[in-house]
Length: 100
Image (tube, rainbow, N blue to C red; front, side):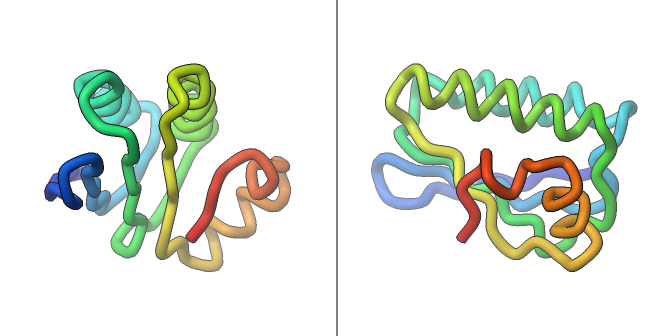
């Protein structure tokens, strides 16, 4: 998995994820989110090129969502494909995460 970042105004950043968010790659996303948690009010995770998400990837998203909510900050996920949407729906994450 690769993650490219781009500033989104003064208070936001966009993460462009590509590849697979699985057990091997989840720590990378977790580190990147921790780097930005106190610096930006909003993080957008763009899944346009993300092909797969595992339970470990879901755990990272859930933990990040909780951390950001506690700090009155937002994580927004956009451009999810049908396979990932189906995983979100089956696990209930569709109701827990903010999708754009």
